Image (cartoon, rainbow, N blue to C red; front, side):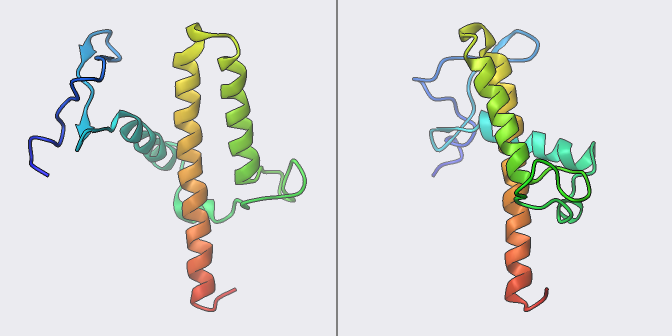
Length: 132
């Protein structure tokens, strides 16, 4: 892969409106659009830096719980993910005019999924080390 491929826009991709309303060529990596990945990683960073949802803190959140609330009054990762996805689905049902909201909710959901995967990976690594 040449350096020109990284960050180059794809000729078949439409321009992407930026937050200030101007249009920007879509960024790609080897022809694959990366805007969504960048937005998800930014949302995950915000979860960590702004809200304190670090991988260490996330260890306190169960992956799944049979009840809506965990014993300490929180929510499980899978409950949170399904709730966020349900909200995106509800907004999508209102039509094309709500796609920006749907996208924003899906980005946040994807960041939450990354946190859940990190939580699971940490637990599996702990199991591999023979720790409870």
